[in-house]
Image 1: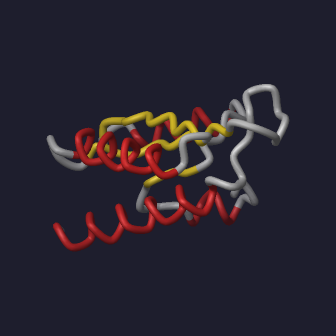
Image 2: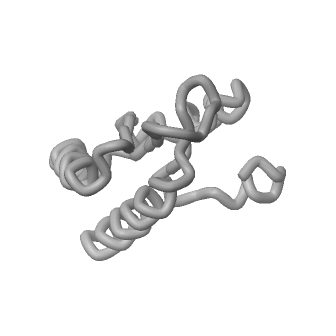
Length: 108
């Protein structure tokens, strides 16, 4: 379990780094400061601390990129993601373990 959490975290961190150059401003423009929205499930009591520290370290390296982190309880993440998708409020990075249904419906 601990190993899989680390793998998921590493993949999400990599995705955040890759998106640093692709983020957008709230007004939809692509110049200047960028914002990345990141939604993650809460796996343990330390999950929030982990992502907060990672975002702080990321911001030191990429000061023009803002990462908005939204933590969602593991028991509610599926419903929350469905709501985001149905209202077209897609996060830039989503840390979940199931995405095949979204891919199957061309929602990725």
